[in-house]
Amino acid sequence: MAAPEFVPTKPTDRPRHYTSPPRRDDEWYADRPGDLVGRGGQPDVDAGRMGAPGPDQGYLLKLVPLLRPEVRLAEGERLEDAEAGCVAIALKRASLFGRAPVIHDLRIAYALWGYLSADAPADLVAERRRRFEGVHLTAHHYPELRAVVDAVPADTLRLAPAQIASQAPAGWRELLSL
Image 1: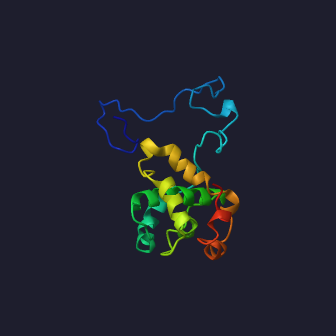
Image 2 (image 1 turned 30 degrees about the vertical axis):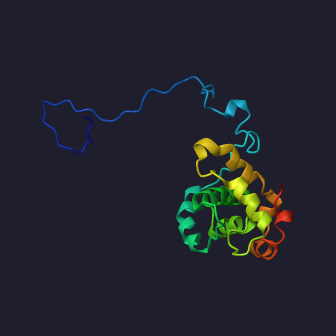
Image 3 (image 1 turned 180 degrees about the horizontal axis):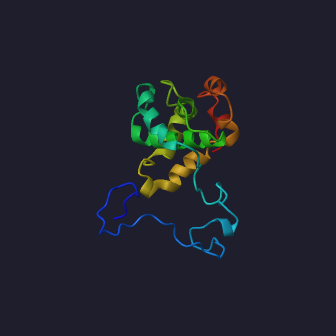
């Protein structure tokens, strides 16, 4: 095992120390299957429903329990489905602004689908029940989860939280593209 030069050694030992590997004279090329540089870079986010990449997205999972007491579910709805769909929408909103998610992103996602209102319109509840059913099982229902996220246009997600709170859930048809 290599040791730093200041470590005392026996006179008969031949200790090794770190040396850099030899320099390579040839150039490096992005020619491996995972290298995206040679193929035009990162694929378009909207092509193929690849999601919405952004920084520190896992932080949103710490925020989800904070809003659980405010979520209002209708009969036959599951909290896991509401959380999975709204987390994906919140991540899309955060990535539009190029930042990590915050509590307002999640609150907007819940408000758009009427989860924060005890008296959400019956047609909105029927629509969300149909769309959100089973989306927490992303291994089997990923296309359905992406369809929930795609139903919320970027223009809606760019609105301020106060604007969405004043329009939703009564004006939900104008905020969503179904």
